[in-house]
Image (cartoon, rainbow, N blue to C red; front, top):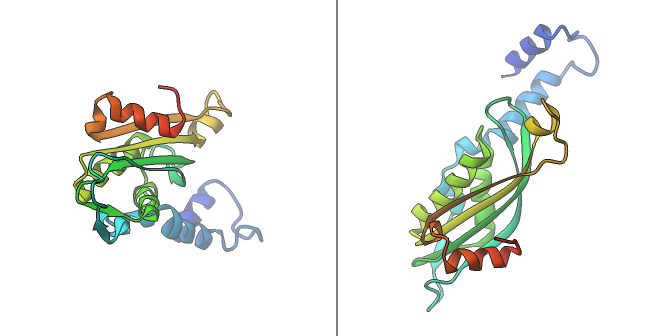
Length: 185
């Protein structure tokens, strides 16, 4: 990867002898391997970790964790986006620690992935791994592709939603979720 970055800098006509560029290929490679693409090395099961029996009589009740900060890379232009994920699920027989939901978001966010697919992967994995009857992932992000290129919409915020199970229907449970998020729906 460092060799490819070195070739990229040369192709851009930049002098690799410039003191600011001497170690750039190695720094870029390290950042991509350890921060931007490390999600490929994890599975949703690993990210969610150990599960615990759901509390008695919790069937049908929402677990919601909001404002999970994340960063990712758009696969179209290799430009970053960052934002907040709101993750919700109804426990089946198992629950996980709240911090594990953040790890699940990062498992997919640290890949080359579209925002829409990120939300779908989180909601789908939560449903599958925890056998949850209802899951959701709502993401608000600032896309560098939109903010820095083309029309340069510097204030634009993108929103995507993904639902599985009972939350796919716009019913009472979904309205409860949106109420908890403090959003109009």
